[in-house]
Amino acid sequence: MTSDSDAARLRDLAVLRRVRDRMDREYAQPLDVEALARGVHMSAGHLSRQFRAAYGESPYSYLMTRRIERAMALLRRGDLSVTEVCFAVGCSSLGTFSTRFTELVGVPPSVYRRDAAAATEGLPACLAKQVTRPIRTTSIRNGEAAAPEPHLA
Image (cartoon, rainbow, N blue to C red; front, side, top):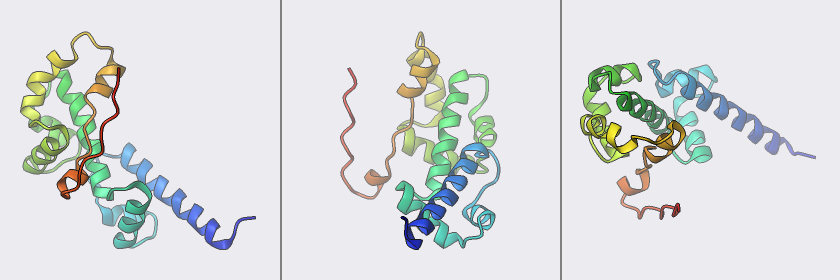
């Protein structure tokens, strides 16, 4: 049998999954932690703490990673400018978008756009997505050692 605290924890996790799913679905919408928290009847601080405990990163960081992943796909297509991609994925500041993109991907979006076609030429889309997925640099930004990447043969 589950205790009341176990049941509460499961309810909290279900709420956090709904928040994460909303960010995945509505990444291009103007979402912020306050709006997400209101949607699940929590304070912004409580949502942020619970989300970080469950997923290892803040809601803002998670949302920006989703936006950058989508931006990478749009930039690989090559038919949109960096500014158009920035706004298409829900970012309202080109500077913030470019900074975050560079942090996660390792190169500015303009360089990524220029080089992406050559880097993924001939690869099936499923492999191109895996190869170009942004790295998580949260631990690096905080001065901690990065976890070793698994070796893929």
